[in-house]
Image (tube, rainbow, N blue to C red; front, side):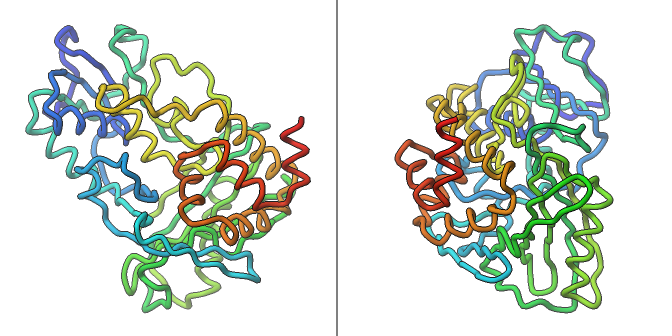
Length: 362
């Protein structure tokens, strides 16, 4: 049921979740779809939901059936280029998926409004200290402009636009286009373009940077607008999305936390949607525990991030060699956090050796 204010007392609830984003709504859907005997209260600060982002991921068996049915669009090819060379990867059995937040929100809200197991309070600011710790999951999300940090941050502004026409194949996602290094007063930034064709006249275009000192939203939007102006004489902005995603292998104080802030975001890639589904199923006992990234992955992600932080000029070469030498299934396993020592060895074999070996031995 959807409520306008919290109930007077909370004894009837088994779990209280602060934050009705992807984790909170996924948890609610798992409860409802699997008809679990659990009462859940979700408290969300926003007063209404609207299309504010697209969640993208390579399809994985851990995507629940009721989520896979909502997928807005799939891409059978992924494109990468460094401004000189282009590589297109085919992955028919593991398509790259786009899930529009509006589709996910509408489905979840309809299910919750007809549920006796889940109550959702909208327009209410909640704080962890207000609730019994044993019942609490703090799943508050979005990062705004971060403070200066010694860690890497993935930052982007994405614009969904309509154009008279475009030449992008509808079955191909440009994952890392025109990879380059941009230098400003803050230092060097590894930058690339991300393009998803939505139909014959609409595109989602993001300019993304990996940097310890990323530009602010206004600058990132300026970069994205310039990218559009280079290609199109005319376009209309339909929607905007942005994020600052910490690429940090050290997750601090995860007690009582869930979702991306609890370490579910893959540090080396920024992908989190499928990982959050794994966390939900693990917490509810619906699948074997698989939400922990693992010590090997944490360590090797740290190596990977140190290399791209210390030598951003190597990033275009690193990623182009990965996608051109690794098998598509192995590259997707890397992106989807299906990692092993053997796969990490495959990654290291595919990229410039000296900086990686130096950081492994550090």
